[in-house]
Image (cartoon, rainbow, N blue to C red; front, top):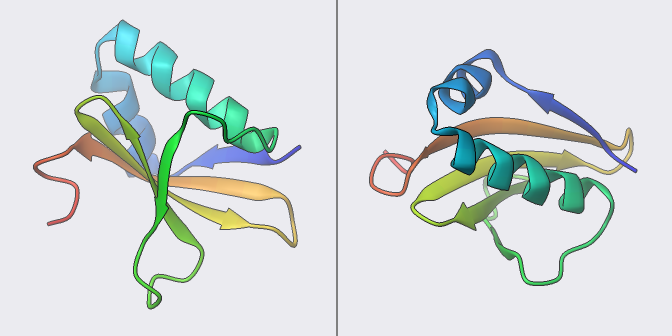
Length: 86
């Protein structure tokens, strides 16, 4: 099972979200950490963004980095879909 870590910015954005979205994001990230990818909308970002992925949860996007060697998932950004790629 992967450990989950938030950057300071991602954690700040996470705490600003409505509780219902926080619960959904927490649940989906936990599933990823347990290697369960069923029914998750995940895509890899461009090849230049090494091991970075995008998880779509309703109108929010969670950008995270997966480090297989040390079993760590680092959540980098959590923003609405209109702002995350800027």
